[in-house]
Image (cartoon, rainbow, N blue to C red; front, top):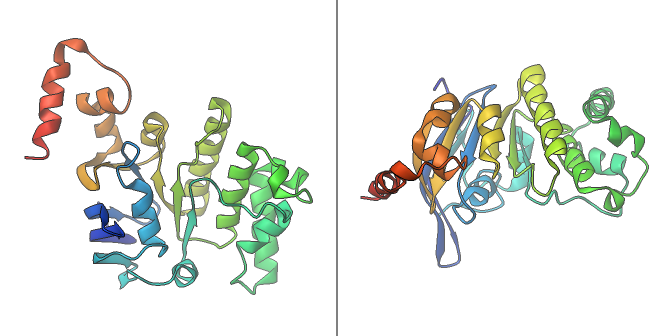
Length: 257
């Protein structure tokens, strides 16, 4: 991989006595989309929360543009250019769509730039412009996801952390959302760290991928390579072949030895 915008080096994160992340290291280069795959409970969301400052790592470093931001408060992390779209969207239901979007720009003072970015969000997601004066709590799940991504864009991020953007959405909406994610990356050069249960669309969208199991990175490769690997096809893409299933399970087990 090229020079890193984000470098996570050996972070260990706990929920009380329970260790959720066990020495995770990963890199995101400028302008790159990187995905983290893994089953429920693997620690994917914890990794994003640790990077964005919601959780503090017990050990390890998080270097953003060469600066160690481990344990930095979330508002300071956001000001540096890391914006987090959490799982479940976490909108402000009694504020309007436009007010929600403006919350993403609360640290900015460039009125002209804010208005420009607001119109850009409406260009990406025309549905939001139609509903800009409607309360966010009345939106559909897909519209709320559009709004959550747009709210993060209003912070002019250098790195966007996306946690399960397809969660609860129809296949058609998932395709639309991921199409916009690719546009954001290509048109604005925003680097993206993507956590996603839908491994197929994640690998099609991202440039590089990591596989996380029980809090540890067990595989890291370009997405084209990951999509061709038999173990990834079986366990994450649902393409099982009975004749070699046992052999693949054996290979997977060896990762822990």
